[in-house]
Length: 406
Image (cartoon, rainbow, N blue to C red; front, side):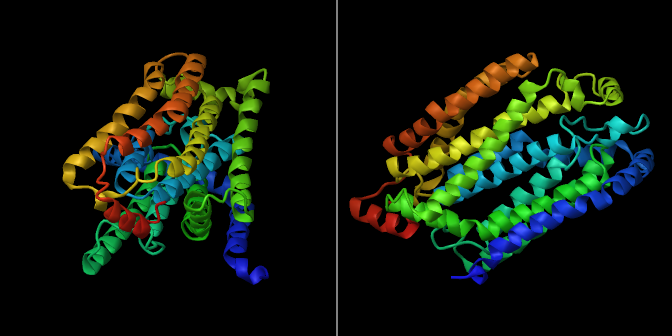
């Protein structure tokens, strides 16, 4: 097998190089133009438009992401859950690492006139909202429809209904991507160069993790989860890639603690405008990037925990089709929400505390609880407490064979 057999993988690498390579060409011109454009647009706007664009921005916030993650956990297969974890993980990594690397300001940090209609923590380049909206929603659409496999059965088996939902959802996803692009501009949160860069990186995530990577995930899943083969070239390579990104985030953490003055990444004029326009913010953009790096570690541990949990609790993900009605689905979802909610209690209790307390007690303790206690207990309770329909041994064997479960 030559390079031709890996043209998709090579194309993904080439696309990333091109996207990163051309960014300096439009960075400053796009940002300078944005300062005038955003100011003019905001002056012509009204309260209704402001509320609408703030609502659009909610689709890339942590609360909505958590709700979507719970929906994937409750409705779909473990295969799709693992793929969605990787998509969230790579998006979070790119956002965190790239923002620290560029440490470019948001428009409302550069201009006294531009209003901070939606105070956002973190640096401006690239736009995390544009990247995540494009990357996550786009990847999920590709994984659920064009790149769907028989091992990940959809909720809607009827072909006509499925096609209708497929293209209606496509229009909704594209609309959300476009609206998010303009929302981040209007709210003064990003310059034009930053929204373009975030959207292009999001499209790269869609291609790479919606088209290229899934076949490796399926191979990884089949050979380790269903056959117990831990050591093979694909598994090793795949694991190494995930670990590399985890190491990059560790370097981000080391960078944070190595700096004597964290304001080295924060222009004094930006800090003054941030305090003036967003007085309730208690963290700086660099601190936010550091917190994002810790949050992203949650997903790499969750990825590996789900890989190993799949062998320990093979029927915990027997999918919506195997459940009997809404009662079991409700119990299954409540089980998930309550257990993971309790694990995340330290974070919620320290949200309004100092940055150090929030990080040390909130993020770290909550993530450790989720990995060490939450995820295993959710899988165990789902399976042991019969919150799914296991059926007879014959029916279970048939279901397991259909869905690719051990």
